[in-house]
Every structure is written in C-alpha cells, then in structure tokens.
Amino acid sequence: MTSTDMFQEILARKEGDLSRVLRNRDGIAIEKSADQMDEIQYASERELAIRNVDRDSVLLRQVRAALRRVRDGSFGTPRSRAMGIALYPMSGGGRSGPPGARQ
Image (cartoon, rainbow, N blue to C red):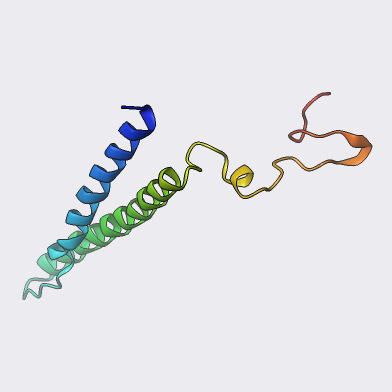
C-alpha cells in the first residue's frame, strides 16, 4: 500500500465521520424556558453547536476536495502548478523567485 493509498483511506474515514456528525443537529434545536438564565444557557449552547457544525462543514469540504485531488492525480502538487499558474512570475531584470529572494 502506497502512502497515497493510506492517505486516501484516512481521508475517506474522516469524510464518513464528518458526514455522520453533521447529520446529527440536535444541539441547534431552539428550546424555550420560563427561566431567563436557562434561555441564556440554551442560546450559548446553540451558538456553540452552530459554530461546530460550521467548522465541520468546512473541514468536510476540504476533505472531499483532497479526495478529488487524490483521485485525479493532482494531490501533493501545488494548486497553482496543477492549474498551470507560475508561482513567481518573472519580474524586472529577468529575475524570478519569491519576493525578497536573492539571486
């Protein structure tokens, strides 16, 4: 098994885990209470649950994008290179490289 295969397997497991977590959104339910302190506590817990769902959604999109790159063979190459974009365009005097690099 190559390191890419192992990484793809890890990503696939992570994708499954995140998908299961995101299906359970019980923490977002709005609960009403006669006690104002309970209302504040529920709102705080709901806000935390929403932030967690948001974070996990972003992570799931990143995992799926990485899996697509593994499948199409572009995983491990800089995105700009995979897209045919020069990382450091030629600047004045025929020099190339990152800004501030010495020639």
